[in-house]
Every structure is written in C-alpha cells, then in structure tokens.
Image (cartoon, rainbow, N blue to C red; front, side, top):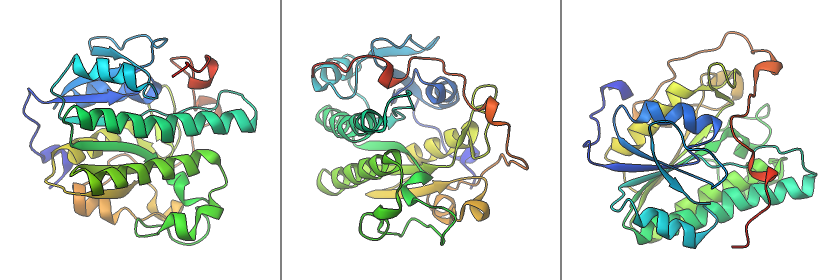
Length: 273
C-alpha cells in the first residue's frame, strides 16, 4: 500500500509542526493539511505561514512551549522540523547553535508535548548521521554512537544523531511512538533545488508515520538515490509503505540550492531561557 492510499487522520486530530516557518515548513504544512489539522509553531521573529493556525514559541524555551501547547490542547502528534541552518558563524558558534536547536530543543519539545498528552512524534533527521556516505553501506541497523560517531565529521550530523537518541529514549521510557526520518538533501521546488528527498516525498513519509499502527521507535532512510548514497530505504518501505516518487537524474546547480524565507536561527540573539 502506497502512502497516498493510507487512511487519513480524523480531521479533528491536531498535529503541531515545529519549525513551520522555515523553508521546509512552509512547503510541508500545506501538504500535511490535506490529511491533518495542522498547527504551525515557530520562533517569535518568524512570520506566520499564511492560512495556518500559529503558535509562537522557541522550542528551547519550556515556559513558552507550555503556554503555546496549552492553547491548542489536545494535541495528538508533533512533527519536529527545527534546525539551525548555516548562519555564517565560526565553527564553535555554529556548533553551539546546532546543539541548542537539535538536542536541547528536541529534549524540551518532547517533554513539554508529553506533559500535554502527546504520544506520537516524527523527527526530521538527516543522512549526515552516517558521516562519510561514500564508505560502506548505511542502513538503519547501524549502532552509530558506538561504531561510527568518529565518522560524523560535521557537528550538525552528530547533533541530529543525538536528537534521534533523545527521541528513542522518550519512546522507551514514556510509552510513546516515534519515527526519525533521515533525509538526503531536501528538494523544495523553486527554493532549494537539489538532488535528494523531494518535499512531497517527505510529506508522504510523515503522513504514513502519523497514521500507521506503529509502536516504539524507528529510523527510516528517505532518499531517491539509495544506491548513490549507500543508504537502503527498505525500512521506509516496510514500515511506512514509502518509496520515492521523485527522482533526480542530474544534480541541480548549486546556485539554486537556497533562497531563505526567514531569518536563520543563528542570526538573532539567543534568549535567556
């Protein structure tokens, strides 16, 4: 059964999408809204997405999250798209931004959502957790923290991996269900045109992760180029009924990769949380 054939959520179910004001979020929310009642959540300096119920909070700020999630209680699921894009900072400051967004933010968001009764989570991760994709074959059975952490060259990939482990811990200890979706470079037509994972394919995977009768924690590789990236997508097909519907014969020009729609996380001062 393909993701398009999966039964939609009840229209009264609420799904909070954290990071809804970013490049991926603005493209993803309308796609998810075909099946779900979507509530966007993003930082105060990010303008609301058009036509979306909107919550203002920084996922690192537990007080702000408490107030925001209480305003839309009950919430049945949370999708975490938040990331700290490259803000032109030095390596040390950029790494701190990645840790704040991916690890501290994920921990805070998960715990405040759990306190509000949420028990299903989707985390948008990255193939960068595997480090060097040109060496070996990388499937989801790899114990990355034990075997491959030294290959995760970029702090971004390491902090996304740590965020996955935070979600895994929550699922193991709090009777929650979570899916981490490891993306190739995200492709958003007209905004980030690069080979990798098309935004519509990501929406299909998230829809399936929200609706399939899953339990516990799982990771799934999502790429249209499994052979090229040495990352099999068998688990996504098995658990989610997912296969990439968009393929890329050529690598788009680097100049078309990014057209930021909102200020990057590192471009504003960190709040005193």
